[in-house]
Image (cartoon, rainbow, N blue to C red; front, side, top):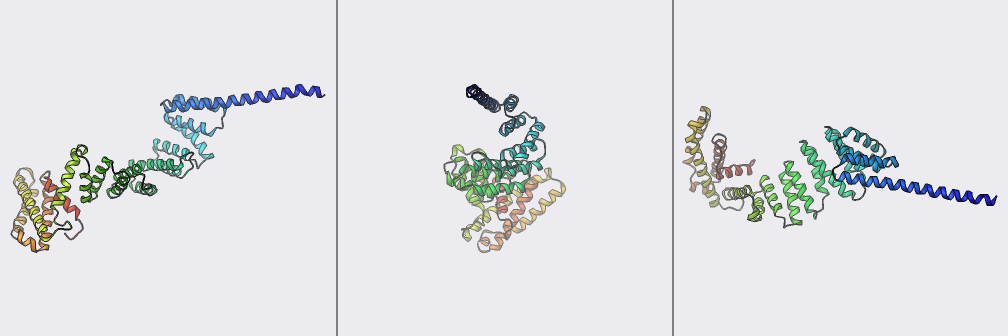
Length: 367
């Protein structure tokens, strides 16, 4: 009996060895086809990648990672319904997977269902990730912000951009610059300027960021900052429009009679200069009104011209030096002139544009 057990033991050992070899070969084939699928997917061949992943699954049908890559190959190949079927099954097993939720967000977006895409994006942000979870979640939040902005969902976008900004450390200069760009798209130039300033504090050698900060400062009405940042851009890197913007900012700062730090004489001189520019603009508009304007528009310009000529008797440089209320009244008349002439008489000159910006700068104040 003992002797008969020996061949049985050898046969058992051979069977175990063969089984292990077979399973090892299966595992090797799973990995080989999986790797080939990843390579085909990376080189823009999703159809071939799908076949590779399907071959891999034939050896290990319950491999979630292979199923996920197969679904992503289908997604890349535009086979959205098939991809979604795989992903929904994966989501049922792992609803907290950040990668699965992100893929479902992409499918929902491409299938024209943004309302369904948004919850998937948010689930991906707070889901589990292999590897650099913090970096992956931040990347998804950036993508969600762009997604919301592209669909003009500005309120939701503002919330997400603010959350993204709050997560960034001061040293993450590139990310702060990107957040600034998002704030600009969300029509929040003041917030964008804050992000650009943080980025510049971390990396003050980025010439383009000075340009971006300058334009954001201009759009938010911070003209002193706009001049400071635009002036730091090297002349060879300052584009034509941005060079004109710098000139306009400097004109606003040099013509604004309400700028802090001026004495009474300086305020009077600037008001007088602005008033003369307004009268000149109104005179040219009146001369051209006969051929270019309708009867009602011509009458409006002529009425304003009569008011300006009447006010001209009181608005004198000596009176402006001693009468702050007269300066305010003069500037209000100038604003009226600039608004009317810009509406009826074509493109304004640089000084006229500066006067309109000065009005916008002090909108809501007594002056």
